Length: 367
Image 1 (cartoon, helix red, strand yellow):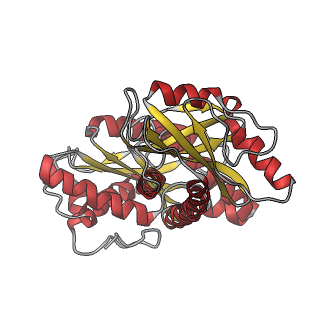
Image 2: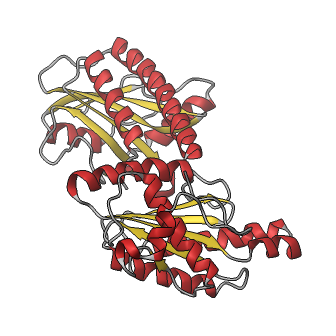
């Protein structure tokens, strides 16, 4: 799996900074994937050898080929020391800064020779008290080899890199929380608003189809009142899983909980017929849940005759109106805006009316 964009960019910046600071010709930053027992390269910078890419999709090396990533750190800590860097030479010289009894790594030496590099300095990256990965900087064959001062400097650079990665992870987690519904793990309304604005810009520029499927989960109040909110939350989570499964049928679709018992799918690219088919499958699967009373689903798509869509508000109002009609009619399938008469479609007229229809069960259309 490719690295997340924020981590990938941080890795590139850290590797580039270390390469320049240590006068290297090449640098890489890798992370230790414990569950897979491997070092995975996040970024390569500088002079790339044949087969090396700046952001490799799956360049990884078994940890057993580089045991110092684990053993070196543990041995240092067991002796009361701190993790430090060491040097490898293409000619197989001793490792400067290595623990007592360590032997040179023939895989690294072979890689240096194969790629025309004379030496490298390797610095473990420690995050939250655990080995996270490594910073690797190399020089060309024939250039001065790294010395003791370079080893000490690489150790400091690895610590700075660890602090930067920790900050990147904190920001990524804050962003995830800001755009994620805590109960279901789906996207939230803020994420939908952002994605919908971007999608409609693509629609205006390139004519890309944008479809919104709004769902109102039936029977949640009755479940909460009769069986408790914990059971109601379980219904929301189960429906969220069904919605996610159906959303996966439309590549690139955003699956979200808008709040309360309202959910939506935002599809960018697939045609309205394809979206409507998936909405029908959603109705069928929701009806099979052993909790609740199915779902009311409304669909609004720029691929249907609904008139120009210049704003996210109008597309939401159309999907809302379609969902209202589905709920009022106790429809077992989706209601699609514009499918019955274009501008004269009752759903379109309802959405474009200045006031929402009366009735205690109807929430006001989104503004």
